[in-house]
Length: 264
Image (cartoon, rainbow, N blue to C red; front, side):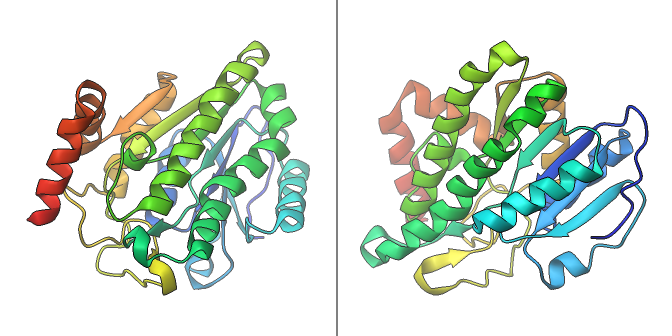
């Protein structure tokens, strides 16, 4: 743990998974400027170690696909903080490659972090968020509501994530809980640094075939504006907004535009 975990009366707490990444750090900056206490969670390693200890946040390492480790993590956060008011499910990986070339194990690996880790953490913090009448905020993607060529595992995991939180929204509303979903298009968090692993697994924001990239700082501002307005669905960026509208109006047109973009 890196301090400070000092308790300030009335100060709200936000947990951000994928906290060592570009978007996670940008969300952390926005929240702390607004007076929140933040808890950044990411895999142990160099990226997490580079986060300096500063007042107003905790930095914790955890493999979120390890259920006992996650349970211990959530207990540690719960012990350190008087309330859990916002959980941002930002941890995730992408997958680049055609389905024909993708091993079945890759689909499972992508789902473990993009879907099951978020679902398991939501379960762990369910009563805490109910107690604070707080918010679950899922970071999805354009691939969560529309097809994305050469991202079958990634798109499937994000569709599942959206289905889960849309359903949870209805169940938790009587408890005063909000479940929000935001859908960024391409956020420039790891451009030029793909670090692709076997099966096409890569860090988010590292794809070379993205278009109209936006900065993590801009994405975080849009996400938090949507959070303050309690928007159930928050498209992030011009591409996300256009994709949502076109896919709703004409899925065939959306698929044609995607094929045309790939040919370019």
